[in-house]
Amino acid sequence: MTSFSPGAVRHLPPVVNEPIRSYAPGTPERASLQARLAAMETERPDIAAVIGGKEIRTGATRQATSPHKHRHVTATWHQATADDVHAAIADGQRAWRDWSERAWEERAAVFLRAADLLAGPWRDTINAATMLGQSKTVFQSEIDAACEMADFFRFNAAFAQELYAEQPVSGPGVWNQMEYRALEGFVFAVSPFNFTAIGGNLSGAPALMGNVVLWKPAATQMLSAWYTLQLLQEAGLPPGVINFVPGDAAMISEIALTHPELAGVHFTGSTGVFNAMWETIGRNMGRYRSYPRIVGETGGKDFMIAHPSADPIAFAVGVIRGGYEYQGQKCSACSRIYVPKSLWPKVKEHLVAMIADIKVGDVNDFSNFMGAVIDEKAFDRIQGYLDDAKANATILAGGGASKADGYFVQPTLVEAKDPSYRLMCEEIFGPVVTAYVYDDAKWEETLQLVDRTSPYALTGAVFAQDRAAIAQAHRALRHAAGNFYVNDKCTGAVVGQQPFGGARASGTNDKAGSKLNLLRWVSARTIKETFVPPTDYRYPFMG
Ligand code: NAD
Image (cartoon, rainbow, N blue to C red; front, side, top):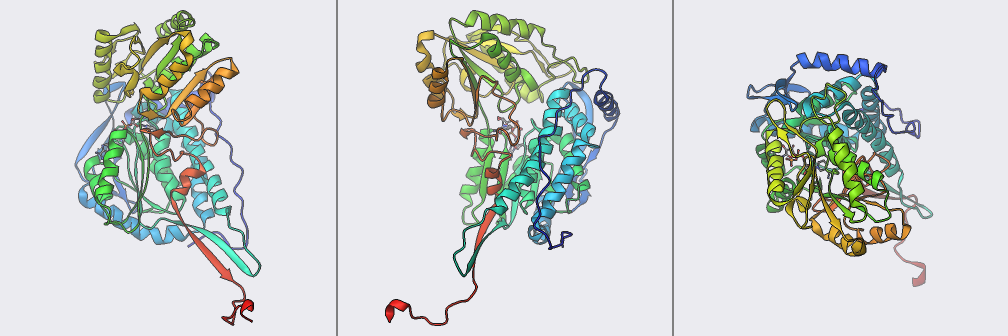
């Protein structure tokens, strides 16, 4: 059923990026968010699985806590059982017929409304949940949970319109059409902890294109994932279009990935988990009704390289923001830097001074630049890298960590003499940046080194004033990063402006927040209609 009357060719309202609010002292948005934060500190939602619009509480509960105050419980959540997962897939199939056949404008309207609700009455809730649940500062939360998620919903609607408008040419007497059908079956969306907006996009983008989605959020993003789902429901998403199944990742994946109706996987997370999912699908080929679309954006070992002509202070500021914001837990976070000997004293001096100035702590205190890392497992992993650096490299700043009250890791700068030292190659996912100082004369060799040091190819940046050096970096690093920056930090991609994703071990590079991504969620049908068909089988040449 559609509420859009057939008598119009519609164009969506123009879309723009959601403006970022400052939350500076004295602003109304600061007061309003602080009030919501205070209220949320005392709430403890009882998060359910949601299947066909019904909330299912299994009683097998887990607690969500604040990383910066890990004794503080933010929510209780019920883990879906295997039966619930089967029921969710079956319910999705029920919802599919109606949703996949709705006018695309109707689906777009749901997401445009969700974006406006998010930018308006839901903004404080989604920001507060992201701050308390994932330990983001107000600014990191605002650019993710409020702005990026609204941008995903609005821009994807606009990209969908462009895609649907792409139609083949027609010769005389013939009308050719392309119909961008939803995939038959369901899309399995598996989201990471580090961006609230990614959860909304992994589930939302396939749904926008008419698919039904089974969404499994990360345990450590449960609070903001729950509010994202509530937001979509309030925006008018029909029951069953996105079924929400929190719970045991391996169990849920095993059921979803071996199901004959699996039409696609929309994943963001670590490379190892994605590889295992792909292997499961490979082992089960022959079971599926269609070839599943497999989209995964995975790990990174993102770099920043300075040329001897670079501005050392701009470079150092880029490293601080790119490396330590959100505690280095962005897939795009800068984690290895290459600095020429001639610039190193100045770059080092600035980095060490800025690191000494950075405040780490509870995100309720807006003067903190960093909060805590996500959980104890992450803390222990990062601590392991710090211990290794103490033994095998030089720690120039930071190096401290404590998990007494929250999982706090100081921003840390390490210098490595060996460019293949493990901290230069492996994804750490914490606030640790490792520097390698190269001879000024070895610029070209160093570009090669950057290219081959890690299996990932997500983001990277070059700083230089010399245009010839920038051109060399462009060429040498063509395949080393899917998002490449010139004189800018390697984080902070904006939907519609810098479509995001990397190749090699960083994923399938289907560019979240672009038409390329939406293409993966449709299966085109070509239709040819002949207005006056021939009535004689013979051709003129036969005369
Ligand atoms: P993760 O791989 O631990 O978890 C991601 C999701 O996979 C979660 O929902 C988790 O529960 C689920 N999962 C875990 N084990 C599973 C299993 N055996 N089977 C199926 N699902 C399973 O990643 P994370 O710690 O949440 O996020 C950090 C990672 O995500 C980093 O590697 C980071 O680089 C990557 N990331 C990449 C991008 C990108 O765009 N390339 C963006 C954000 C994060």
